[in-house]
Image 1 (tube, rainbow, N blue to C red):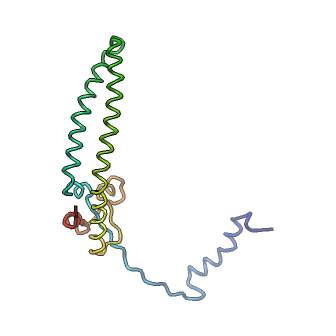
Image 2 (cartoon, helix red, strand yellow; image 1 turned 180 degrees about the vertical axis):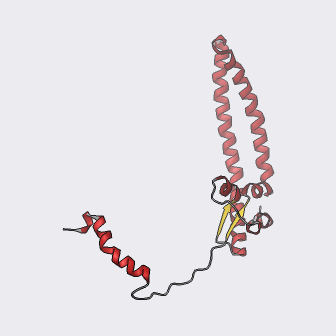
Image 3 (cartoon, one colour; image 1 turned 90 degrees about the vertical axis):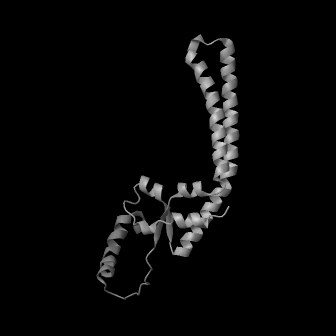
Length: 169
């Protein structure tokens, strides 16, 4: 009869060994002391906004917002007419919908292209700053707070300003 089919039996057989190990009987095995992990926080949004190339991202966002909002207003005006909309207005609605989708896709591509090098630079600045200051782990302050991962962190663990100083375009 194999104990593999009965995992609870394996646990019963190993229980005395666990007790002996827990009480310190048997061979003493030295354990290496591990250094405490230093955890830091960074305000990623502040760093992204501080990047010199962020102005180009903001310009694309503003242009997209203005153009897409104008198209959206036209779409909503026709949609508000409901069944009273004429055939021409329904055709225009279809064209506007196609146009707004295409333009949104185009702006998304432009933003992705503009944001990618900024994100790379921010990641590099966070990594170099963390390493220079001896941090093992760096968390996004907003994410840590929003997700309840961290309830309290000393202000000395915030490396945002140092990361901003290390940003390279």
